[in-house]
Length: 295
Image 1 (spheres, rainbow, N blue to C red):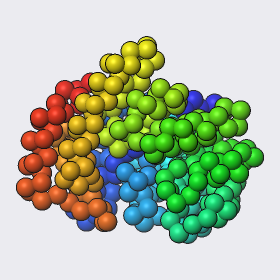
Image 2 (cartoon, helix red, strand yellow):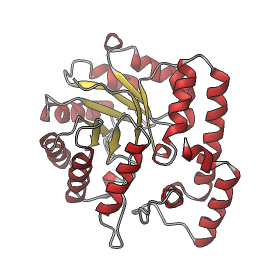
Image 3 (cartoon, rainbow, N blue to C red):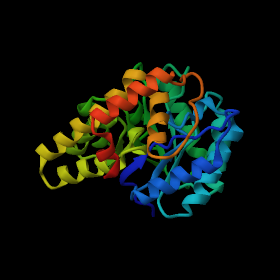
Image 4 (cartoon, one colour):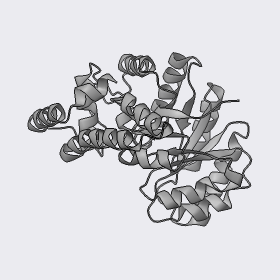
Protein backbone atom coordinates (compact mmCIF):
# COMPACT_ATOMS: atom_id res chain seq x y z
CA UNK A 1 0.00 0.00 0.00
CA UNK A 2 1.41 3.39 -1.02
CA UNK A 3 2.09 5.85 1.77
CA UNK A 4 1.47 9.41 0.61
CA UNK A 5 3.48 11.73 2.81
CA UNK A 6 6.12 14.44 2.68
CA UNK A 7 7.47 16.71 -0.04
CA UNK A 8 5.97 16.35 -3.53
CA UNK A 9 7.10 18.90 -6.16
CA UNK A 10 4.31 19.89 -8.54
CA UNK A 11 6.56 19.05 -11.45
CA UNK A 12 7.28 21.61 -14.16
CA UNK A 13 6.80 20.14 -17.64
CA UNK A 14 9.82 21.24 -19.70
CA UNK A 15 9.02 22.45 -23.20
CA UNK A 16 11.12 22.30 -26.35
CA UNK A 17 11.44 24.94 -29.07
CA UNK A 18 8.18 23.83 -30.72
CA UNK A 19 6.25 23.84 -27.45
CA UNK A 20 6.22 20.08 -27.01
CA UNK A 21 7.52 18.05 -24.09
CA UNK A 22 11.31 18.25 -23.78
CA UNK A 23 12.07 14.70 -22.72
CA UNK A 24 15.79 15.07 -21.89
CA UNK A 25 15.09 18.13 -19.72
CA UNK A 26 12.19 16.30 -18.06
CA UNK A 27 14.43 13.38 -17.19
CA UNK A 28 17.11 15.77 -15.90
CA UNK A 29 14.60 17.53 -13.65
CA UNK A 30 13.30 14.22 -12.28
CA UNK A 31 16.87 13.09 -11.57
CA UNK A 32 17.69 16.40 -9.87
CA UNK A 33 14.68 16.18 -7.58
CA UNK A 34 15.34 12.55 -6.71
CA UNK A 35 18.85 13.63 -5.73
CA UNK A 36 17.28 16.18 -3.39
CA UNK A 37 15.44 13.43 -1.54
CA UNK A 38 11.88 14.23 -2.52
CA UNK A 39 9.15 11.92 -1.22
CA UNK A 40 7.04 11.85 -4.38
CA UNK A 41 5.93 13.76 -7.48
CA UNK A 42 2.70 15.38 -8.60
CA UNK A 43 2.67 15.72 -12.39
CA UNK A 44 0.50 17.39 -15.01
CA UNK A 45 -1.18 19.79 -12.60
CA UNK A 46 -1.39 23.57 -12.69
CA UNK A 47 2.37 24.03 -12.44
CA UNK A 48 2.88 21.25 -14.98
CA UNK A 49 0.47 23.02 -17.36
CA UNK A 50 -1.50 19.83 -17.88
CA UNK A 51 -4.77 21.47 -18.88
CA UNK A 52 -2.91 23.52 -21.51
CA UNK A 53 -1.39 20.43 -23.14
CA UNK A 54 -2.85 17.95 -25.59
CA UNK A 55 -3.92 14.56 -24.26
CA UNK A 56 -1.06 12.95 -26.21
CA UNK A 57 1.49 15.28 -24.59
CA UNK A 58 0.08 14.51 -21.15
CA UNK A 59 0.39 10.80 -21.82
CA UNK A 60 4.00 11.29 -22.90
CA UNK A 61 4.67 13.21 -19.69
CA UNK A 62 3.24 10.41 -17.57
CA UNK A 63 5.09 7.67 -19.42
CA UNK A 64 8.48 9.41 -19.23
CA UNK A 65 8.18 10.33 -15.54
CA UNK A 66 6.88 6.94 -14.43
CA UNK A 67 9.60 5.13 -16.37
CA UNK A 68 12.30 7.42 -14.96
CA UNK A 69 11.05 7.13 -11.39
CA UNK A 70 10.77 3.35 -11.72
CA UNK A 71 8.96 2.96 -8.42
CA UNK A 72 11.48 4.86 -6.30
CA UNK A 73 8.89 7.34 -5.04
CA UNK A 74 5.11 7.61 -5.52
CA UNK A 75 3.79 9.54 -8.51
CA UNK A 76 0.34 11.17 -8.55
CA UNK A 77 -0.84 12.01 -12.07
CA UNK A 78 -3.23 14.92 -12.53
CA UNK A 79 -5.80 13.92 -15.15
CA UNK A 80 -8.46 16.66 -15.13
CA UNK A 81 -9.98 17.83 -18.40
CA UNK A 82 -13.09 19.80 -19.25
CA UNK A 83 -14.20 16.93 -21.49
CA UNK A 84 -14.86 14.03 -19.15
CA UNK A 85 -13.94 11.49 -21.84
CA UNK A 86 -10.42 12.94 -21.95
CA UNK A 87 -10.08 12.86 -18.17
CA UNK A 88 -11.23 9.23 -18.08
CA UNK A 89 -8.79 8.26 -20.84
CA UNK A 90 -5.92 9.97 -19.01
CA UNK A 91 -6.86 8.20 -15.78
CA UNK A 92 -6.88 4.80 -17.47
CA UNK A 93 -3.55 5.58 -19.13
CA UNK A 94 -2.00 6.60 -15.80
CA UNK A 95 -3.23 3.41 -14.18
CA UNK A 96 -1.88 1.27 -17.02
CA UNK A 97 1.57 2.84 -16.73
CA UNK A 98 1.98 2.40 -13.00
CA UNK A 99 0.85 5.63 -11.41
CA UNK A 100 0.38 5.44 -7.64
CA UNK A 101 -2.60 7.77 -7.70
CA UNK A 102 -4.58 10.20 -9.83
CA UNK A 103 -5.89 13.65 -9.06
CA UNK A 104 -8.21 16.23 -10.55
CA UNK A 105 -8.99 19.87 -10.06
CA UNK A 106 -12.60 20.97 -9.87
CA UNK A 107 -12.66 21.41 -13.66
CA UNK A 108 -13.38 24.77 -15.31
CA UNK A 109 -17.02 25.39 -16.29
CA UNK A 110 -18.29 22.98 -13.65
CA UNK A 111 -19.95 25.73 -11.68
CA UNK A 112 -22.02 23.86 -9.11
CA UNK A 113 -21.10 21.52 -6.30
CA UNK A 114 -23.48 18.92 -7.74
CA UNK A 115 -21.74 18.92 -11.14
CA UNK A 116 -18.28 18.65 -9.54
CA UNK A 117 -19.42 15.81 -7.29
CA UNK A 118 -20.85 13.94 -10.29
CA UNK A 119 -17.62 14.47 -12.22
CA UNK A 120 -15.44 13.28 -9.33
CA UNK A 121 -17.60 10.21 -8.71
CA UNK A 122 -17.42 9.15 -12.35
CA UNK A 123 -13.68 9.81 -12.61
CA UNK A 124 -12.85 7.90 -9.43
CA UNK A 125 -14.98 5.00 -10.64
CA UNK A 126 -12.99 4.80 -13.88
CA UNK A 127 -9.98 3.45 -11.96
CA UNK A 128 -11.54 1.95 -8.82
CA UNK A 129 -8.33 0.32 -7.61
CA UNK A 130 -6.24 3.51 -7.84
CA UNK A 131 -6.14 6.15 -5.08
CA UNK A 132 -7.96 9.31 -6.15
CA UNK A 133 -7.29 12.84 -4.86
CA UNK A 134 -9.40 15.92 -5.32
CA UNK A 135 -7.49 19.12 -6.08
CA UNK A 136 -9.26 21.93 -4.28
CA UNK A 137 -8.72 25.11 -6.28
CA UNK A 138 -11.99 26.87 -7.05
CA UNK A 139 -12.96 29.96 -5.05
CA UNK A 140 -16.53 29.83 -6.36
CA UNK A 141 -17.42 26.50 -4.76
CA UNK A 142 -17.49 25.34 -1.16
CA UNK A 143 -14.95 22.51 -0.94
CA UNK A 144 -16.28 21.36 2.42
CA UNK A 145 -19.65 20.64 0.81
CA UNK A 146 -18.03 18.87 -2.15
CA UNK A 147 -15.82 16.68 0.03
CA UNK A 148 -18.66 15.85 2.38
CA UNK A 149 -20.66 14.54 -0.58
CA UNK A 150 -17.73 12.39 -1.68
CA UNK A 151 -17.18 10.49 1.56
CA UNK A 152 -18.81 7.37 0.12
CA UNK A 153 -16.37 7.15 -2.83
CA UNK A 154 -14.28 4.10 -1.85
CA UNK A 155 -11.00 5.10 -3.54
CA UNK A 156 -11.08 8.78 -2.61
CA UNK A 157 -7.83 8.95 -0.66
CA UNK A 158 -7.67 12.65 0.14
CA UNK A 159 -7.08 16.06 -1.30
CA UNK A 160 -4.62 18.71 -2.30
CA UNK A 161 -5.84 21.90 -0.65
CA UNK A 162 -4.54 25.03 -2.38
CA UNK A 163 -5.69 27.94 -0.28
CA UNK A 164 -4.94 29.93 2.86
CA UNK A 165 -8.01 28.95 4.92
CA UNK A 166 -6.55 26.61 7.51
CA UNK A 167 -9.90 26.25 9.30
CA UNK A 168 -11.59 25.11 6.10
CA UNK A 169 -8.72 22.75 5.34
CA UNK A 170 -8.93 21.22 8.81
CA UNK A 171 -12.67 20.64 8.40
CA UNK A 172 -11.91 18.47 5.41
CA UNK A 173 -9.08 16.69 7.22
CA UNK A 174 -11.46 15.73 10.02
CA UNK A 175 -13.97 14.12 7.63
CA UNK A 176 -14.05 10.41 6.87
CA UNK A 177 -12.95 9.65 10.45
CA UNK A 178 -9.69 11.51 9.81
CA UNK A 179 -8.49 8.84 7.37
CA UNK A 180 -8.00 11.06 4.33
CA UNK A 181 -4.54 12.17 3.26
CA UNK A 182 -4.19 15.95 3.04
CA UNK A 183 -1.54 17.79 1.07
CA UNK A 184 -1.18 21.56 1.35
CA UNK A 185 -0.79 23.27 -2.00
CA UNK A 186 0.07 26.85 -1.10
CA UNK A 187 3.84 27.09 -0.69
CA UNK A 188 3.59 30.40 1.16
CA UNK A 189 1.50 28.71 3.88
CA UNK A 190 3.50 25.48 4.27
CA UNK A 191 4.43 26.15 7.91
CA UNK A 192 0.85 26.81 8.97
CA UNK A 193 -0.47 23.77 7.13
CA UNK A 194 2.20 21.66 8.83
CA UNK A 195 1.09 23.03 12.19
CA UNK A 196 -2.46 21.94 11.31
CA UNK A 197 -1.22 18.40 10.72
CA UNK A 198 -1.22 17.90 6.96
CA UNK A 199 0.51 14.83 5.61
CA UNK A 200 2.65 16.67 3.10
CA UNK A 201 3.13 19.56 0.69
CA UNK A 202 2.66 19.76 -3.07
CA UNK A 203 3.89 22.95 -4.69
CA UNK A 204 5.55 24.85 -7.51
CA UNK A 205 8.61 26.22 -5.75
CA UNK A 206 9.39 22.71 -4.52
CA UNK A 207 10.91 22.25 -7.99
CA UNK A 208 13.73 24.65 -7.10
CA UNK A 209 14.09 24.51 -3.31
CA UNK A 210 12.46 21.34 -1.96
CA UNK A 211 14.89 21.16 0.95
CA UNK A 212 13.60 24.29 2.64
CA UNK A 213 10.08 22.86 2.82
CA UNK A 214 11.36 19.62 4.26
CA UNK A 215 13.24 21.67 6.85
CA UNK A 216 10.07 23.63 7.65
CA UNK A 217 8.07 20.47 8.21
CA UNK A 218 10.85 18.93 10.29
CA UNK A 219 11.12 22.05 12.48
CA UNK A 220 7.38 21.94 13.11
CA UNK A 221 7.61 18.25 13.96
CA UNK A 222 10.37 19.02 16.49
CA UNK A 223 8.33 21.86 18.00
CA UNK A 224 10.72 24.59 16.87
CA UNK A 225 8.08 26.89 15.46
CA UNK A 226 10.37 29.93 15.46
CA UNK A 227 12.85 28.16 13.18
CA UNK A 228 10.01 26.95 10.95
CA UNK A 229 8.58 30.46 10.65
CA UNK A 230 12.00 31.92 9.84
CA UNK A 231 12.50 29.40 7.04
CA UNK A 232 9.01 30.09 5.71
CA UNK A 233 9.65 33.83 5.55
CA UNK A 234 12.93 33.24 3.72
CA UNK A 235 11.22 30.98 1.19
CA UNK A 236 8.45 33.52 0.76
CA UNK A 237 10.98 36.19 -0.24
CA UNK A 238 12.00 33.94 -3.12
CA UNK A 239 8.37 33.25 -4.05
CA UNK A 240 7.55 36.98 -3.95
CA UNK A 241 10.47 37.76 -6.28
CA UNK A 242 9.08 35.23 -8.75
CA UNK A 243 5.51 36.51 -8.52
CA UNK A 244 6.66 40.10 -9.08
CA UNK A 245 7.85 39.38 -12.63
CA UNK A 246 5.33 36.71 -13.67
CA UNK A 247 5.38 33.39 -11.88
CA UNK A 248 5.23 30.95 -14.81
CA UNK A 249 8.19 32.45 -16.62
CA UNK A 250 10.04 33.10 -13.38
CA UNK A 251 9.82 29.45 -12.29
CA UNK A 252 11.51 28.37 -15.50
CA UNK A 253 14.18 31.06 -15.24
CA UNK A 254 14.86 29.95 -11.67
CA UNK A 255 15.28 26.37 -12.90
CA UNK A 256 17.86 27.67 -15.39
CA UNK A 257 19.76 29.10 -12.44
CA UNK A 258 20.16 25.59 -11.02
CA UNK A 259 21.22 24.22 -14.40
CA UNK A 260 18.01 22.82 -15.93
CA UNK A 261 16.61 24.58 -19.00
CA UNK A 262 12.88 23.86 -19.13
CA UNK A 263 12.17 26.23 -22.01
CA UNK A 264 9.39 28.78 -21.94
CA UNK A 265 5.92 28.47 -20.40
CA UNK A 266 2.88 27.54 -22.43
CA UNK A 267 0.04 29.97 -22.99
CA UNK A 268 -1.66 31.56 -21.14
CA UNK A 269 1.58 32.14 -19.19
CA UNK A 270 4.07 34.37 -20.95
CA UNK A 271 7.87 34.26 -21.16
CA UNK A 272 9.85 36.86 -19.28
CA UNK A 273 11.52 39.77 -21.03
CA UNK A 274 15.28 40.09 -20.79
CA UNK A 275 14.79 42.94 -18.34
CA UNK A 276 12.47 40.87 -16.15
CA UNK A 277 14.93 37.96 -16.14
CA UNK A 278 17.74 40.25 -15.02
CA UNK A 279 15.56 41.78 -12.30
CA UNK A 280 14.52 38.32 -11.12
CA UNK A 281 18.10 37.13 -10.82
CA UNK A 282 19.05 40.23 -8.82
CA UNK A 283 16.12 39.82 -6.48
CA UNK A 284 16.73 36.09 -6.04
CA UNK A 285 20.35 36.79 -5.13
CA UNK A 286 19.18 39.36 -2.59
CA UNK A 287 16.68 36.85 -1.16
CA UNK A 288 19.40 34.23 -0.60
CA UNK A 289 17.96 31.81 -3.13
CA UNK A 290 21.23 29.95 -3.71
CA UNK A 291 21.44 28.95 -0.05
CA UNK A 292 17.85 27.74 0.04
CA UNK A 293 18.25 25.80 -3.22
CA UNK A 294 21.29 24.05 -1.78
CA UNK A 295 19.36 22.57 1.16
